[in-house]
Amino acid sequence: MFMNGKFCKDPKYVTTNDFFFSGLDKPGNTSNRVGSNVTQLNVDKIPGLNTLGISLARIDYAPYGLNPPHTHPRGTEILVVIEVGLIHFQFNKGYTNAVAFAGLSSQNAGVITISNAVFDSDPRISTDVLTEAFQVDNNVIDYLQKQFWVDNNN
Image 1: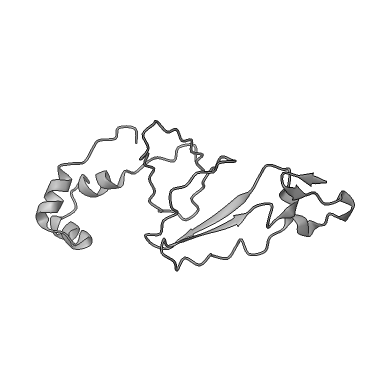
Image 2 (image 1 turned 180 degrees about the horizontal axis):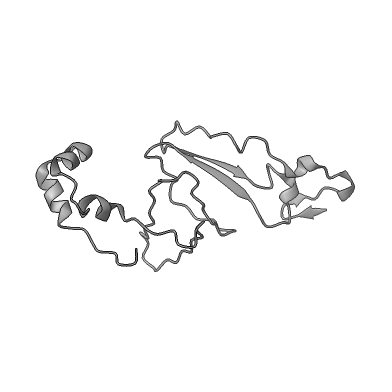
């Protein structure tokens, strides 16, 4: 039988290997132009997924790595960040509204807006420390400290 563009295996011949992939525990090679690697586990790599309506991906990021902007024309996505401290953001560069839903692994995960934490901390982080850390002039730090926005939902 041919289903979703793939042949369905006769159930008499299905084995556990049809539902198994070895290597998901191994980091992907991020030595490339974008500094990331996507290991896609779909019906091509796990034949047992055919007709189940699910797939999986592991995304590895080098420091400053990027998973380029993309969409999934035949599915939706939930992304779980495993390594603690991965700073992330979303940005809608399109011309229409966008909607996103996030699932978090805590009943009260909190939010730390990095710009506020760095440029509006109390007590303030020394300008000397910030100019050294960001490799910019004191005037840049002074300007940035005046630009922060307040997030009262924290």
